[in-house]
Image (cartoon, rainbow, N blue to C red; front, side, top):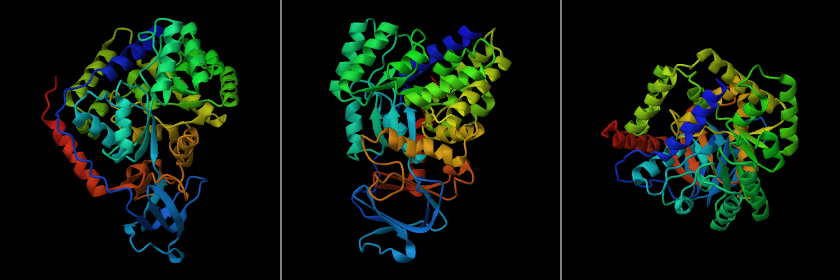
Length: 456
């Protein structure tokens, strides 16, 4: 069972990300309101995320992409040129983040690339850490930053370091230095690296000031990866391997030791729990294939996801009870990491099997609550923690004067029910405002663009 499950997810993830569907070529127009327009959320309940509190009946003023004023409605003067956004009875939170996301390569059809970016924004995701780069993708980041397309703020890893892409320590060193020079934001680690290759990458990263994160190669192991400065550990699979959950019950004593080591080293963890339920076969296929957001994914891609899942369930050695045990262990690991003070970052690995960009986040946050986190603590992983992680890049992640104006207007309080992050009335990305009507119009265009495409 151990080799069966490990080999299955490691062999599936990369090919699926590289396999792009055929798409229509027409690109949607940007449709974003100008960032230099002065806007004011009036009468809104602000959840600033600096602590667990709600500031009622506030005015939040945004100008030139920044929050410039916050105060009680009765005591705050609006600029004469401000365009008002009605916030009465609504809740304003910082924009959310997808800290293990993916963006199609630049040579994919423009409709597909821009649709993926828009789907993130439509779901309140205003920051994406792209975890598999392609040559030329930095140009897309520049276009997004200029507001030429509707997109989250992008922080991109370069092409990954894996057993397929790296063949020697010298090559790992050269690739790390090359990506630093090109301006990528971090190095992405995939399975398959030898210890020598991994160490060469890590040393070059330290010398060039590059961050690195992702998977833990089997030969390297979690402890050594922490010692070498790996910053984020994505999917919890490195913890699974270190704790030998494939081989038997979770050792709570050793789990506590690993949690303490992780906390002291200051590492970050991106769980992506929902995707792993799919990869391990515990997610119900009928429920997956009926997810309403699948209309926003290419039909050929959806059919591929269905076929892979059907094949997974039909494998002779597939054991549903064992898969459920492993998922329960992953949930326990996440709970222990959080309780032990290890910082968690929100992420889903979208777009992946049945994880549609942005929409997958709304499923993920519910799993995080099931792992013992409060709604506020879950929100911290996608807001304040992300701002802290990117503190050297920009100032965002809370609702405060001077912060980048990444904001989500909700019709219901997410502190009462984490599912309320799905009640989006509008999204602001670096000061650019997209009201609900605009979001719905664009979603309809995306669904229509994919509707006529063939299944193969």
